[in-house]
Amino acid sequence: MGIGSSVDGTTGGHNSNNGVDGGGGGGGGGGGGGGPCGACKFLRRKCVNECIFAPYFDSDQGVANFAAVHKVFGSSNTSKLLHQIPPPMRSDAVLTICYEAQARLQDPVLGCANEILALQEQVFKPSFTPL
Image (cartoon, rainbow, N blue to C red; front, side, top):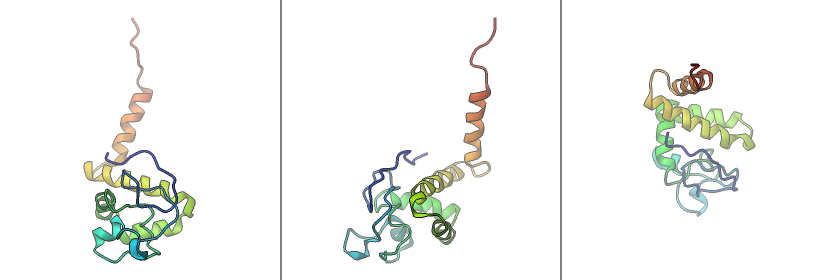
């Protein structure tokens, strides 16, 4: 799907190589770090220290991942959702949101439900045929 399945768990970074950083700390690139986060780059706005997206969307792959999230869910809805989630759980939420957005773009009708159905079929399908 284009979204990595691992979260690197470091604090505060724009350094994930899959575009979704699991860091819980840090802020935007406005404090002198390394430029805006991927979300702020996509939205063409200044990345502030309190940017809700900065810890989770790095400036490289984060632009592409956030573009999918923005297209499917919208940046305002995503921001509101992330504010309601406790900070330790946000990295998992961002991974899920990105995965669901990518799935929805690939399959506009079923989205990630199509993949769930395929996995259920594999689990419940007998792996052998009786003779």
